[in-house]
Length: 301
Image 1 (tube, rainbow, N blue to C red):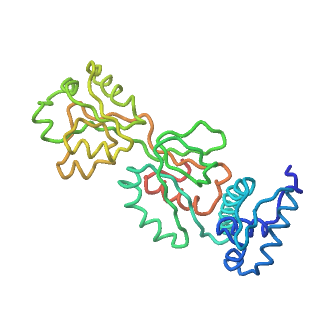
Image 2: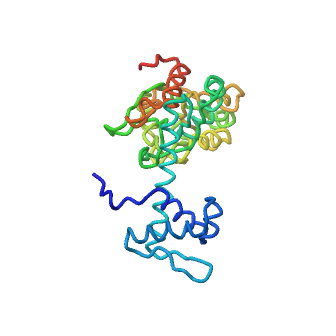
Image 3: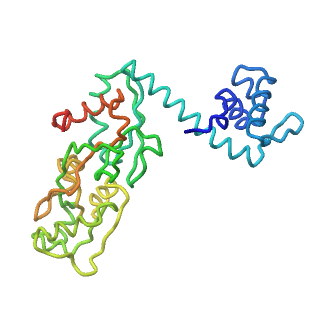
């Protein structure tokens, strides 16, 4: 239960946040289409309710006290979340709305974004805000509706659908293959390995599938994103182990070639992950159904 006496009115918070951000009651009044006196009264009411001084008044300017600075930060975040929640609630009735979606950078650039035209053609009333993540994060804390991940977090409050597997392919630039003489899997022990930082064990697994172990003190270059791994491979910096769906263009153009030993099934795949309370949110339902169809899976999987 909330202590209701501690919850200020929304109008008082809005007036306070505007004055704090602009450093002036007059500027806040102009932004909010109120009188300067109305803004001043709202702030005074808030100070009286909380029992603390939020502003120091100096002539025509106001400056935040330490308590005011703290509340301004919290109020800005709270009001933004409230506005987002209101817009999303309205979307339940209209069929439209906004989807805040976190994606993997290279997967987004190489697979998802080129297909999104089909989604928007069907759902013109839905907007998608894309952000990128490569490391684990808290969807709910960041206000994200859904995320595409390679491994779902162990959180009972999240729903996870694996919509696509992946095959990891060993590749390198043709010049590197020719110069080093990569004719068999064992030859890769003499090369530099290119690795994406969240897939630290992938090369070990690949060598194990070949009945081999990585070379002693074999050099490894680690990159945050697969896109950088791919570009490093094209540049001839070493051999890369990359999901096949991310390097179709480079293989088709001949910039990269498959190496001896072939690919292996990745341990993860791609998952759509979202909080349980978003399960029936219209924009997410529309995106989920479209994504599963695009990945050639039935919507119930």
